[in-house]
Image 1 (cartoon, rainbow, N blue to C red):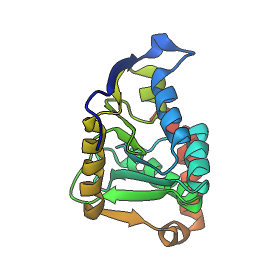
Image 2 (cartoon, rainbow, N blue to C red):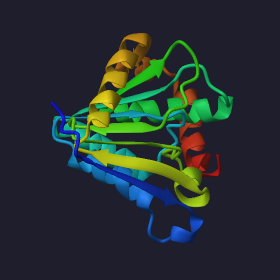
Image 3 (cartoon, one colour):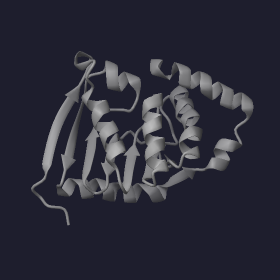
Length: 187
């Protein structure tokens, strides 16, 4: 049972914070501190090399890393970048799921039933470095369990993206994926 006397810390981020980046620091900390699991929802899996490495390293260490992205997209080119990022993540043990009923726009992270984040912050360059964003980090309170229950309700309506899917993409498509990842900070 989660205690009700935990901590809730609202925070904001924006271009004025550079070179310090509270949002990226919070996401990175949650991913790297996870011992049992870290679950993430993001509409835009437009992540940089460092975030990819953090997710992959965490999964390779035996942590259950699951990411939910939309199957029904709002921008086709961003969806293509999402898909371009599946292969390296899946190859390293990250479980990627597509939310099938519609477009999922939530940005949440929960880690080890201890702490969570919910807010407006996507995991892409624009959101982390160029936009003004807000979120709440909470720890040791019942809201963490609520977020975990939300994830438990989401997984059954998602389709897991398999390594087989990533392997069946043609060489030309995988080449296009590399180009998309190169230009993804502009999206």
